[in-house]
Image (cartoon, rainbow, N blue to C red; front, side, top):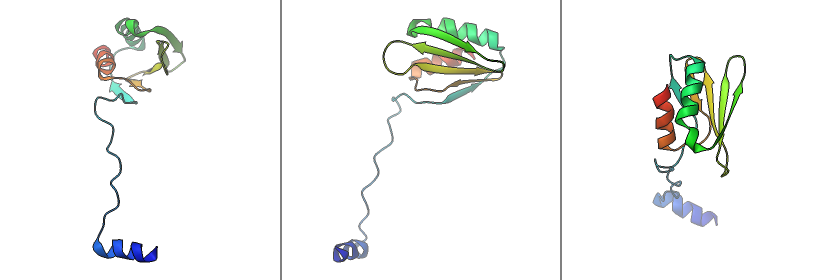
Length: 104
């Protein structure tokens, strides 16, 4: 075994390359958008814009809100709404990201 390792070292053999990163069309998590709109305006726009994606639940706290959308398949879509910042905290496809960006 040591002879094989030495041979690989001396010949300059490279280790196998790591797997390629996910293609761009794969859903990605954690996209943030800066905004100057009020939380109330954002909540209303996002609820209307994303209404066709599934059942919506808006969880409101003092400084932030979270919009959760479930469609019965897999994990829910979570969007965190804070003053001056909207963040998609779960995987979202390009169409959903574009629709969220439309509201901010």
